Image (tube, rainbow, N blue to C red; front, side):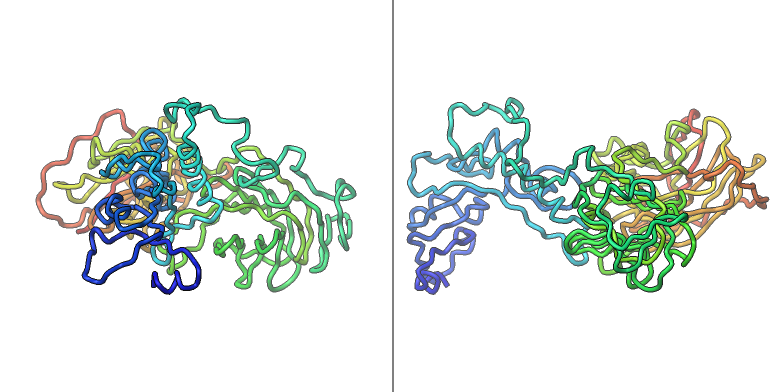
Length: 523
């Protein structure tokens, strides 16, 4: 292969491996460019001795395998760009256990870093090029600064002075916008926009499939909210807005609220009824997009082909509004924070668990990690010695109406992902079952709704979880949208504990904890 490439007048570049895979076939490395990615696979001096030109791309610390976990280190979501700045230069291979060569060695071409998009197919986590660029750019800064060789550079990463803008002029990879780009479109303001075939009526702005509002802001990065007050009157696919190949759907080809961004077509479990008016909020966050219809959060539909898909960044496609038949009563683009109106704040209750891995790690273990609003950390039952039931306890500081619970599996799936459950609430001093069911083993957030009950105690009992463990990235309690929601009578039902082997008594719960989530895993 090397001879063939050279025969075309080109310079071969290969990943070095002859130190580990020596073989008996002679290899002509004269003037071949060799990436030194692992000292065990390819020793830099050996490559130079064979006539190669080398490039330092040592996997520790320059490799990144994007996953969305925000982990940092060798083969992490982000490369260890701080270590790269502090300890790495193109001639220094010591971070990977190699030598430090003379910087003036003419056979050292330079250095680099690598972003490996290995999480695809069944391992797909949902990251887009928008997300991956952030991983690439963080490492690129360190790579660039450590290949300059300037004595004016900061000695450590922490001492670096960042410019006002880290990006080149006229570039905007974060898709940020100015406040002046925010908009409120309604009959009273439509004259301010470039509208084509949009009819202003008493009901609102009437759209046909060929109607449009053009010249809007374009691509809008995360941390924005698009609020729509809309009535769909047409049949079939209904496109609300477009930028390039990306689209936001009021109804996709299957009839669902959805969007298409880069390689992903993400559907939400809601089909709008024809001639019915809806309030829709599309909430974009880093690595997460939420959709609310009339105040209710709508679940994303899981794709069996991507069971680990946990992240869904969306750059809102707002170059043009149009492609639907209906009435747009109003459309508002805002940068104000949006909070789920049904969410019971975590400071309304305290938590503990009968089984938790303590002290755990930075991302895994104690039950508090299921209530820290960080989807990249998670509670996990004790790794060894404990069996079901596992109880995560939440006790409300004062009785509140509760009518739902959300469960977000640990990032990337794995041990403890819940597949069947029961939910109990305390009523008149007794625990009453209010919901039960099964879930698929995937990374999608699950929501359980049940009849409102005023309670100060809830139990979430896991009847089965992957590998017999219990885990959760986030658990949230939900309340009715309106206090006027009537409370339905419920029949007390004593919780049933499945038969299980005799195991050591789990640690006693702290008395200050009030609401319980019993996590029971049938092994």
